[in-house]
Length: 270
Image (cartoon, rainbow, N blue to C red; front, side, top):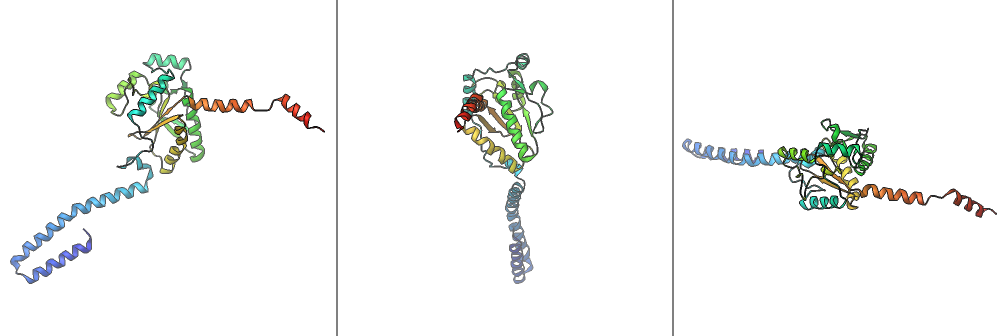
């Protein structure tokens, strides 16, 4: 309740009391108190909303936890179905258990992800889970290095490849986890996906990340999803590396050869 309104109410009560007998004073004071109590909750709620809004504005790193926030890259059932269809088209199997995971790692179907100045791995991520598909590692290296050159601080990856056994255990206590089988199965099971931590990122840093990923998403190279938990879930498709291989092949094919240089040089002589 505004201070001016409060004192106006008090003055009106005093005037009323001076014009009436003492017997009428008590009911008047009771009415004033009831009016004050009725206005207090509304004032408290308004103050809380203003405080929350101001706090979010002063600390942009909290913007994904503010009620009503709309993600730039939301997930959906249809998106999960599409991703699994694409992975099936590429004939990428879901890794069933620990034994199968080790076989893929030994055969280098899955490649190791190592920490660098630009990329850190969560301390609780086991060594056998620090693997992914080659094109996913290519993207991680390019993405984190570009981020590091801009902000001079690393990004952290919390999760990479998983097995169906691990995914089943994860679902027992994480209601957000995708199933280990079916048309919406977790893409982590194929080794193409990573989860990046969003904790501690400022609004500028997170905005840079979203902008970096936008043209790659529009080109069908990646599928980022802003999850309810503070992580950015990113699926990387094989065409990410294929596009760069094509550019490199084109560049090498158009480089002048020694014979060509000699022919050109001879033709230009007087």
